[in-house]
Image 1: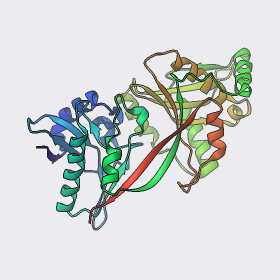
Image 2: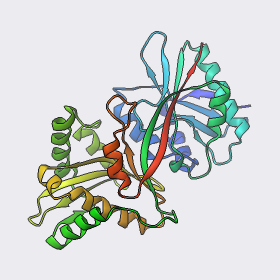
Image 3: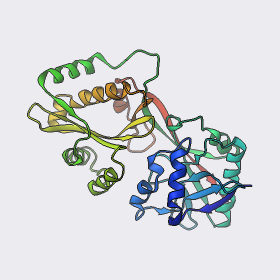
Image 4: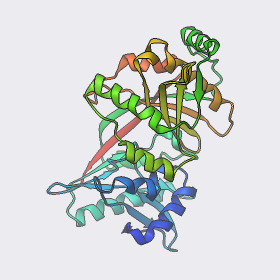
Length: 321
């Protein structure tokens, strides 16, 4: 018999210890990451124990304040959904869904929004949820497309010759890539670029990302391109998990765009991580238009030029009533 309870601060260590040994968890589900924006997202995470009292699953979640409320798993994270024990059975995952829906009904929720963890983050096969989402008549509300390089693919390197030309040119001219650079060197470039192109700001403020970098120094890495005079002209912020390297932010100054510094940076990073057997995937993030429905096809073409191909990140909803 599986039991369900709501996460509270006194369960911090138990939660983190479980995520670290789960089959599909990443550092984004550790409480030091999830709680950095607790002022913006009302946490309502859930924990599930088997009949022996062993934790077998957790559900990172927040409440969207409405009347009646909806449960989101999770609005403040790139991906969400059940984080599962390596030993869990598909029938037990079905029980997780049944218990959660019953819990939400009893507590007056109207809807459950479920954001899947893309399969590239699964250390073991972990798509039991697909079956149970179907069984509970979940509606597919969104399909965000990511571009991903599989380092273990037998297909030859298909990055464009144009990108390799820019790489070789900048390398000869004395441009360099700094690994684990100072975020303060990159952030003004990112902020200026987002404001100029979209009139927007990064999802994380500089103080937030600095705090997260301090908490997760091995998982959050800033890499920049410096011109021959040592001036930073482009960069990216990497979120590094157990087998995936994700570009969370990518941006270049006007000079960086002029000399195609991002091609130089991306090829450098791809080659660096491809040589490390610990990593399986290089993920460029999503490429959706501002409406969240259409594709940003120009951006996708750029990413595909490095050898990336499509992986879906889906969001479902279950009507509780």
